[in-house]
Image (tube, rainbow, N blue to C red; front, side, top):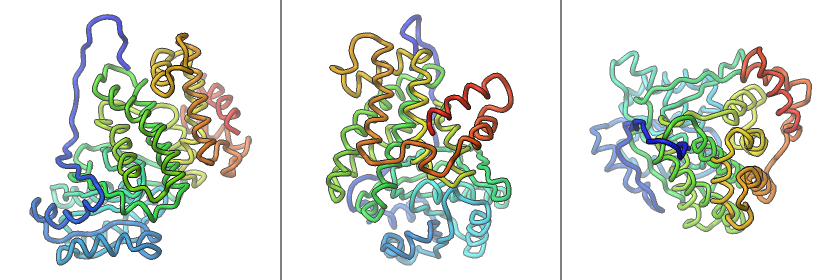
Length: 369
């Protein structure tokens, strides 16, 4: 959030994403989109559950028709490096010229990693089309995380060229997503929006969209929980997720995301769940240092209850996020995902290194137990 004092200065960078197609039934446009970009051999990259326990991947393959060259369905949670290597080999063997990721953040990140590897070999990045089935918003990012299986740690990279060229948001494809995954990935989007809003620097476009994303997520997630078959609500949540991570190259994520990266890969916790556990506590931790930004978030959530005092409104924002997570019946404590107090120092060191902040972060993590 830009400070209100003094003139605004800054710059805005755009990722090379050219089209977002949204609405129920928008999958029907995929064949035309593949043809439009001049591709002829599409590789679907996804996970085993979507491929074998739902009809989502069969539907995507059918929509591609003769452009479907093959499917790799071996991506697991947090995109382990072995799966990425196997997907890359599949792309080579099929001579794929477009990668179509289907699922949550893991297959989308895996496809980005495959694209980077193929670019090293071919000298050009293959096109990507992302079809998300969760609200993680990885499809709008130039960031990717791949898990080093030996170290049980996620290593990331950033390259604007790996942002999917086309995104298809078809809420009909999300009905098979387990309820907890759907709702917790919505909290991940909420995490994006909150950390966007207090990211350093001036980012006036992102600020407006982040606040609107917060409003929509607070309204839509409980509605989707109550009416899981409501496709209009699901579409609106997909758009809120987009708003939460719009132009994310301009707004680096903060402590909640950094903690989530360390917790997720090492202890095999989905990132939506890590956000459920970390976000309210990180917001409360920053209430005295990011007061104006968090107060604005509190008033966006519920202006009458947030009140006129900035600090009270900032603390209200943190409490409101925690209350929302509770109403959605999502995990709120590290102990619920198998993390003990003996693990906390390792998480703190992995997040901020050895130094004066280590003890601060460890104390914060104790509040999450």
